[in-house]
Image (tube, rainbow over all chains, first blue to last red; front, side, top):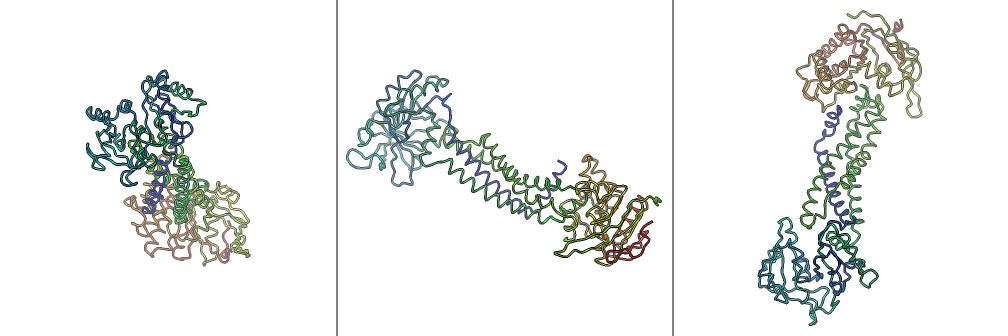
Length: 384
Length: 233
């Protein structure tokens, strides 16, 4: 600790240069924190234990549909309270850039998702109108929709029975999230499964996934195993998991998220290694005469090595910790947008981040530290 | 005035050779010197005579190619680099021509630097640095950075740094080389006071005859050899 003042003043000798370097480390570790949160979310398998709602989808692929006939069997699995189902539609409203989630849902869909509020009369309208659709408040505001509007969606997968690819829905309700933090979930549109299934010419009689509400979350694991066992060795084997895992599987279709994220992180950290290494080497090079003075008054070679290493570790730690703190805040914001707290900078990310900071600090501090250690006092002083 | 005739430094047959490319240059040729405790010695000579090299050897900044250097009973030519660092911290204070203060630190923090190598508490380090600065009449500038001080004041801070850990030996390499005559005399007076009142042994390299007059004994080096005898007692 007694050397802290010396290390601190050396570090901030060129304030602008140090602050810019710290800033770049902050950005690197902010990226690392966020990307690692994404990587962990996509690679860690979450237990269904304690979940009140499970998703049953095809074991083969999330885009592989399941028979509608499975519904009654799932309903009879002990521990199952209710079963809803849905099917991805993937319709486009006017332009591809207007993307939002839209899917066909069972009549009891809202019953298993009590976190969404839809006025009673709008629920009745949804039940009594075959072409009915409901949208989240966010989405309605985004496109200026109001109840009574007709919303045409251009099908990307499911052509209509009349041969056209435009499906027109009647907007009968606008739902909103019970918790304001879940407003990100309001960017979706639901319409009736029966209307959808009767009017499509592909995969009739199938659903995309089942939503299973369990009686006792403490036994969710048993329920999940019982459902999957029911369809084992059938043409449509199932995989029952948490909603979070299901959402992650959905996104994972795009590619190997872990590899993509790790590659980006590797490139970012390598760039930071070069940048910080250059800063440290330059900073030490400028101080050769002063290091020689420290040696003259009795600082040992090892002391100088540690002083330089401590300086580089402090530099990296300042930026790294700030970056990870910002990433934690950013991950919370992301989690709010993706209901269920899917992203967080957890202990594992902090541990990995700390190891990276240590390695980065040592890597950038070691070459100039060794140089300081090997300094010949007489040469350094005479060059001054 | 310190009146101690005990030998502090004994140098015998010291040579120093440097390799410059394929050339092997001998800078010092078998130098013998005795320096008593409490002495104020001036090493004089033209540029390239080897006086700074000799000073560096006595101060443990460099090691001789051959010969022996004994300071206060320790053969410093036999010490490893780590042992030499410890020895310097405990026994030698250095004063340079260009002060060599750390520009980011205040005068007080500069003076405290050698004490970082001791087990003293922060409060004790601060107290000792204050005392050292008082000794060089610079207590009122303790919080000033080197760039806020004049050359003479910077050299006083450097002297305070050299004496703060109470070393036996003060090694001064052209301590007034960068100062005007008046300021130089003040600095030399201060070194003389440290020698006479506080009993510090001072070895000073200078090519300035007026500066050398402040010393009790003067030795002349030329081309790596002492030219005015009387170096060994």
